[in-house]
Image (cartoon, rainbow, N blue to C red; front, side, top):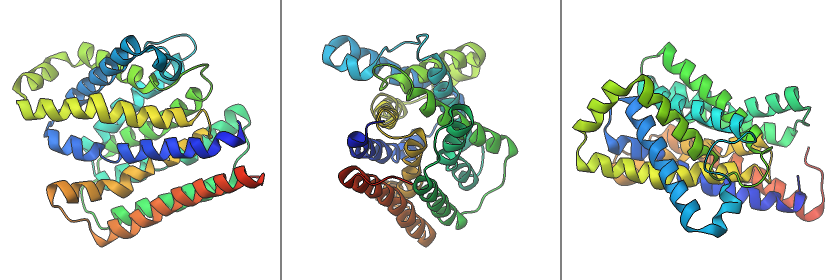
Amino acid sequence: MKRTLTGNGNLIGIAGGLLLSTDSLFIRMMGIDNSWAIVLLRGAFMWAVCLLVWLMWRPSRSTLGAPWATRDNLLSVLFFCLASAGFVNALNRGNVATVLVIISATPFVSALISRVLFGARLDRGLLTAALVGMVGVAIVMSGRGGHENGLANLFALGTAVSMALAFIYSSRVEGGTLALPSVGGLLAALLVGVFAGGPVQQTLMQMNSAQWGWALAEGALVMPLAMGLITLSTRYVSPANAGLFLLLETALAPLWIWLVLGQAPTGHALIGGVVIVGAVLVNSLRSRRAELYGEPQS
């Protein structure tokens, strides 16, 4: 990994995390109860806009990569597919507090898998930032109530593992990687269409124009850009570092919901959000300092 590009990788990942933090707001605005319908819509819209850009803007192809599954990107696409389905189902089925705390383990999972499978060195500074971020998530969620749902927790755990593996294998893909989450989303949409077509079709037929508008904005704009940027950051930073950017959603989602829907965040959300954002920024500044002065990151 080129040290001189680490700073750019962090900036790219933070931009993706900021965009991703609006995802919960868009899902709330959709008002769609059927989780699988959301998976199908976002996957189809993500891939459609990705393919359109690939076809109409030739210079983008080196960054996007192939907007279809290939032998080189197949594992990454598969794990993005699983993560897409798992994330939506976890949020729609269970306690948001527990779900996001479980998913916040993605940086740790990524670091451990990288170590076990590929012998990657564990960056102590990054692991510390991930731990601080998880503490922040716990603070954010400690003020929320809700029932526990074992199936939702399994979806959340599956999302964390799938996202970690998706980032790991994306970092090993030759060429562009921005399109990989969209291709994974398409695969998820196709599988939903095959195995849950009836109920999903009924949900789609009952949607109003506003719901279609929010679904289009989330699937065609927010998700391909957010996940694409975070995935692109794995070209310059470790997959575990990329997983750290996912924590920004937990920190900032309450802020967007407050600004748009008027639902004020709790004190726990404000304190935890500061902790999470601080952990991400400190880790990015640490990487930047190492880049400028040639210091080892340990």
